[in-house]
Length: 432
Image (tube, rainbow, N blue to C red):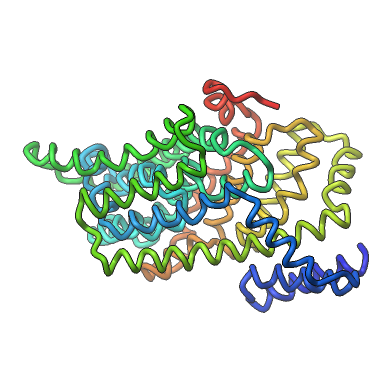
C-alpha cells in the first residue's frame, strides 16, 4: 500500500473514530489522498459533480425518503395496524404478528428500515407494552427484526444505491427482493408463534364484524402502492426513477386527500425532514465518489479480483466469503460505508466469477440488514432505544432467534440463487 492510499485510509479511520459524520470523513480522506499524490484538489469537485449530476437513478432516493416521511406523518401506520389486526390479531402473540404484517405492507411504500422502525414499529411497541405478557425486550426485538424487511421488499433505497454503483437493473433488483422478503416475514412469524405458544402470549380481542368494512377499506388503500410501482415499471409506464415520484405523489394523496391527516404545518415538517435526510445521504454519496476514484486509480478493485482469481474460488465459496466479510464489518461500520466503499471493490471479482449482479445485490442488502440489528453498531437498536427507551441489552437478549433466522435465510439465498432470480427471470430478466 503506497503513501497516498495509507493517508486516505488513515484519515478515514481517524474521522470515524472521532465520530465525524461519515460523509465528511470520506471527503476529508479524499483531500488527504490528493495532497499525498500532489494532484489538483479540484478533482474532488469534479468527481463529486460528475457522480451526482450524471446519475439519473439518484433522483429516486429523496423521493422515496419523502414518501416514507409522509406515510409516517399521515397516520397511515395506525390504519395499517388496524387492518392487520383483523387479519392476524387472533393468532397467539397477535400484536407481534400484527407488527410483522404491518412491516410487510409498509415496506412496499417506504424502502427504509429506519422509517419502518420509527413509524409502524413505534405504534406496535406502544400497543405491546400495554400488556404484561409482552416484555420490553421482546417488543423491541420484534420491531427491530421486522424493520429489516423495509429495504428487501420493494421499493428499496439501498437497492437503488446499489444499482448506481453496480449498473444492475433497479427493476430486477426490486423483483429480486420480493420472494426473500416474504420468506423473511414468514420465518419471523414462525419464530413469534413458537415463542408466543411457549410463553402463552394472548390473542387480540375480535373486532366486531360491523367495523370490518371501514377498517379494511382504509387499510387496504396503501397496498396499492407496490402494485402500482412494480406494475408501472414492468409495463413500461414509467422508469424506476419516475416510480419514486409516483410513490411520493401516491403517499401525498393518501395522507393529505383521502385520510385528511396531513396539515400544512405537518407537511412543512415532512419537507424539512426529507430535505435533511436526503442531504445526509447525498453527502455520503459525494464522499464515496471521491473514495472510489482513489481506489480505482490505485487499482484496488482489480487487485481484489486478481486475488480472488488466484484463490480459485467457486461462486459459492466467494459469496460465502463475502457474507463473512460483511457480517464482521457490519459490527463496526455503517451501511453506507459497506455499500459505497466495499461493494465497488468486490464487483470486479463478482463479475469475473460470473456472479449475477441482481443476486449479489439482494445478498449484499440482506447482509447489511443483519448488520443493522446486531451490536456494537446496530443502528436499528439505537433508533428503537431512542424512540422507546428500551435498553439495547434487553432487545438483544430477545432478538437472537430472529438473528439466527436471518442467518439461515442468508445461507439459503447464497446456496440457491433462484430464490432471488426466479421472479425477475419470470418477468423477462436475462441473467448475464
